[in-house]
Image (cartoon, rainbow, N blue to C red):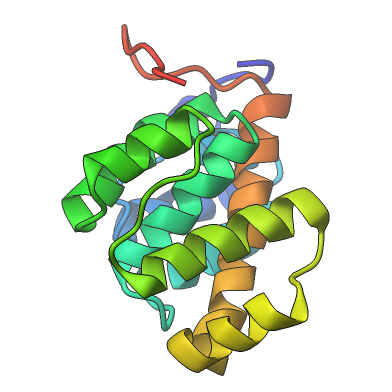
Length: 180
């Protein structure tokens, strides 16, 4: 990691508050990008609260959230993000075949329409920076407007995560190896 991995005794009051807030959240641990954000605790506080909503409180069910996170992690080649979220996507109900196809940059074969839409919207928005009208219309028809807004927010948040992980060269834990 390109910034110092701060220990608990090195934290000032703002950093300690962020640390404690993350530990008390559903995440329950400070790792990955959160270790970087301890160096800018006000940014970290806002980011982790947005992340808590995107991951645990949005209109998207975990299955679709984790799928969108995997598309984002793959798009950015964010090894840490992929390492954490690919297994969570499978646990949430995304098939291993879909995760493998995303990892290999192939078009997955979908059975569920909502999964196809979340994948396509996520990939197209990352790649082209826009969502075509027909894809947007189908997304709002199937997912609803609130879920579409939450999806775009999630994609933005996990882009921030990916950029943080890549810019600060955040390594996988222990002896873990990325399969990206």
